[in-house]
Amino acid sequence: MAIYFVVLFGSLLLCFANAVVAQKTVAVQNSKLAFLQKNGLYILACLLIVGVSALRATDLGIDLYMYEDAFSHYASGELYGLQNNGVVGPNVFYKFELLNRLYIVLIAYFTSDFGVYVMVTSLVMLVPVLWVMKKENPDNLYLWLGLLALLGSYYAISFSIVRYGMAVVCCIVAYYLLDKPNKKGWAYAFLVFAVLFHTTAIILAAAVALFGYSYKRWVYGLIIGGSTFLFLMHKPLFQFMMYLLRDTKYNIYSDMLAGGLTFAPNNIMLFTIMTALCLYYREKLLQANKKNQILINMMIFMLVFNVFYTWLPEYGRICFSFEMFLMFLLPAVLACESRKQVRLGYSAFFLVYYTYIFYNRLGINKIVPYRAFWQ
Image (cartoon, rainbow, N blue to C red):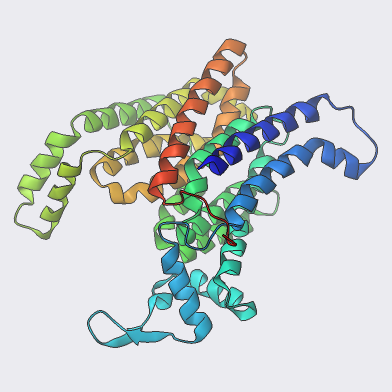
């Protein structure tokens, strides 16, 4: 497990040092040297993050076996096999969405080694996200806080959830392109790609496309108050629903009450805090970047959505995808705050919170202990 915390704290230190060096270094004429001054330490942080993921053993990750099964079947030409019901039919390869199948076909064209698939997938799932985060915060001293949010919410999950992870990457690239001149068409194209990687990504894709509208403060307040009430009353309300549906197929969900809450309370606390911060700094955030309206509305939406996640934990992957966008919002929020003590307080809180989340998600994604592919 130690290597994961080396990745976490090592990359954060490199990212913070990069921001300090970039702000204090005297400008030089040589463009290549200037680029290294502004980005060199951040590139080292990215190499550490991506390297540990790309060089891992191929059995690290709770869902990775499914992708190995699909890849190996296609690479060997065994596209049909005996099903559980004893009938010959298509294997797991055909259960994937279109772009996932094309992605497997592309890699299998060059190699049948699943280890190469894991390496390439790590690059695809991490490099674009790290690049977009830097482009969105080129001179922000608090970029390290965005990296902290990314590592806490996404890094361990990226070892396992390949299809949905790639869909989220497409949405993040689309978010970056939305306000770029003559790039909006490409932004919407990437949102379509996201849905073709994983169907449930349509929720995140729709949010990126439609959440640029600003609502009145009372609407936000009503949503926060309503979701808080639903969270506090979720158990008796759920019991009442199950009573009404006791004779239908939906009574299977009554078993969820026995398991209690998962880590949804942590998510609700996080999105409640972020919603409050968004409302407090709303004008400054929008002055800095109008695209921040998308992030503000995402926080409101996720505050409500996490109430349903408390009831239906299967929707957790949708929650983590929205949580990833905090890598853009957290640095923006701290940049809006002029009081040093308050900035330090925010930083300390999120450092503790995401360190806990990072540790928690290492275990549930079955990537401990770490092993490299040659071990």
